[in-house]
Length: 290
Image (cartoon, rainbow, N blue to C red; front, side):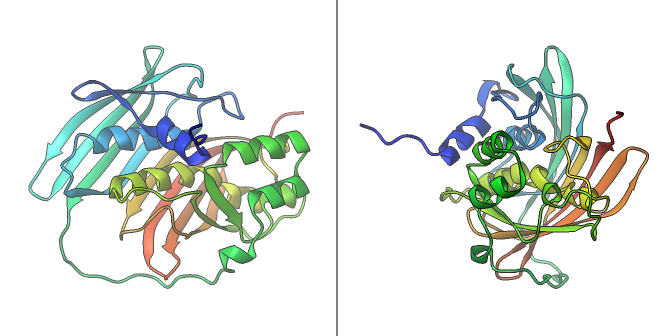
């Protein structure tokens, strides 16, 4: 009998797109823990659509996106690519994700032909070795009801994500420094295509970035029902080559929360200390009315 597909195989299949026309693609969704499409999925699929219209020698260096309305996990998503610019060094694409005849998300992405240039970076923060930290299967049942922990483990099965400290839903009622660290990598090897690694990092980047907002207020988030949240916008800059199937440190902090919104900013480092990605996201963070 053929070997059953792994969770990573399932995720890669989900992120793959069907080409309908030259610059129009269709993606699938799958059941979500919350009644909307996971934002990281839409952003990752949009990067796949953009990347498939760009020459292979041009690498993604930034994306800027807005989540407009919640996506329907029961319906396909159509991605329409606009070829904004094809310059000598940079290529720009705009992608609109459409469901039920209306835009739910849009993204601008820029790609660059490789060139030498000035090079410096900030120092990598201290963090425990990822192997010393509990896996999701070990940690989640300690802090969450069994059914929620099981669904989270299943939803994240393609990614090995390990918290360097107690997650927000493990320290409810205990405000802490608004900073969170997680190590992550895919649960399996990936092909060498640089776009694939960008796509997987984009997918994971939406999982934990607003945790630091919750930590500042001792809130646990949707998992314990004390906060209602959703991503509003998302930006990433890809500085140096990396592999999403090797350990990456996601160092996150929140400089501000106000007016029902919270801001998260982060840096993603390779294990050997190279600054690979910078990330910023703002999201809705509301306390439910009782």
